[in-house]
Length: 197
Image (cartoon, rainbow, N blue to C red; front, side):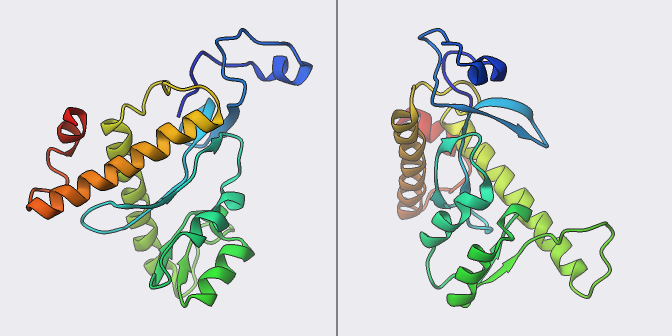
């Protein structure tokens, strides 16, 4: 999520150059393999890999936060009944794997090392990784599209931005619950429904 008020150049930040007051100084820089460099916030999200993408856990931090450090907190919020957790490579750290082992959950992540892998589980992991990738990308897109998350966030500072993003996820979850209760389609027309609310 992009920070409000422009970007604070990395060299200025490191040199202690004071930015304009319109700039959000609590946001930070990160580099994504898909999106390149960005200044703002990261919103790690855990969702169901099912017919409907339901967010189960989320956090909002400055963009520099590492996924593997955020994973343990997100995993603590998940139900103990969870049997399979599809994750990306940064989640392949001892803490998340140990937590999954304690709750009888199997964590499935891509293996490190040169491709192509030739072990016995490679084909199953390939299918599950594709499922994870499609699920999380579509869930993120549906969520961001319905709450205008593609542009700059309308807030400044960690607390206000966290309230905005996590509040929007709560509204998204409540909208899915309400549509389920009345028997309406859960994904068709959801964006228009949320914008009308």
